Amino acid sequence: ENGTLVGIFGFKDMMTRAVAKELPTHFSNVDKVMTPNPESVSPDMTVVEALQVMHDNKFLNLPVCEADGTVCGLVGVMDLIYGCGGAEGWRSLFDTTMGMSVSDDASEEASRYSARASVKSYKPMKKQSEKPVSKLRPKKPLISNINDNVLMVSRMLANKRGSASLIIGSKGLAGIITDTDVTRRLVAKDLEAATTNVASVMTANPTVVSMDDPAMDALSTMVENHFRHLPVVDSNGAVVGVLDIAKCLNDAISKLEKAEEKSSSAAEDAVKQMASLQGAGGNQAAMLTQLLGPLMAQAFGNKSSPTLRSLLAGKPATIVSPTTTIYETAVIMAEARKAALVVENGTLVG
Picture 1: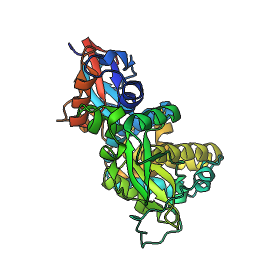
Picture 2: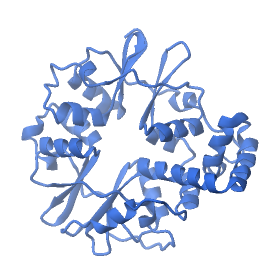
Picture 3: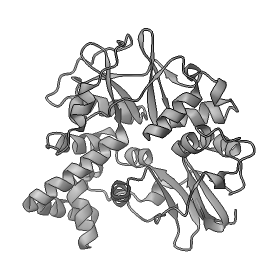
Picture 4: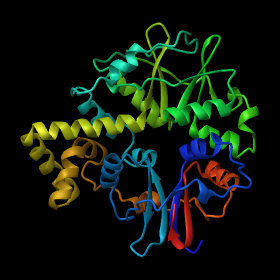
């Protein structure tokens, strides 16, 4: 209302702050569950810079506003991925970073876990690669039963701070449910979480990959099909993890940061490479190009990185007022498949 951004309300907020707490969606306003006073960025920020901001702050969404506060819209991590030249650009970044060592043992955590049911829908990929899916360090899966209701699953994900759960039935992996599914297929359809079986909301028979499959094939599958999550199985078809493309991107940038710390000469080469491509100067440009040079060189060639303004061109913003109900907000989010920006008196408030 009147153009001022006062908050942001995402799919995970919907699931954890509204559904899991059984708020009456027709009588609860979005200002009660939004994240107030979110950080916003300029529409003239490049995709490279936006990726860095998301990485540094662990954001999944960035509100975009003009210098005078006028709301332009919102970009999510998936928008940036699709705006970066398609699968080939990401192939360059991930191919560069998968061979780098990491200091933690997150990949071991995923590989140790195994759901006891096998996955009948699993079909191994034929292409072989020296860099398997395991190099992407799949997360430990959050498991729910096919007989659970959506309220049970939402509360479990809220407690575990997760955004997706794999649904196991008598014959193995039956489906996957995400925070987006909860918004689109439950709240926007005006269904009750406590009386709605997870089977009616989940995505049934999801595409899966094996730990031994080529990582590049898995990433291409996610980018080309707009999947944020992809279940991972072992050689026996048992569920062992889940890929989150946002986490894959965050891990890749973190590895580049660590590599930059260890190799100043490699960093200097990246700066020289990207300075010629982007025409940028200064310490900020140097830092960004050190980290994302391989990606941008592959994705854009001799073209400059696109701005957020170009990504948002022609796309309507998902804007609601603080007094919009959670249900009404869910309908808008479901139609746009985007988080909602909460605007009041010309100011973004949440």
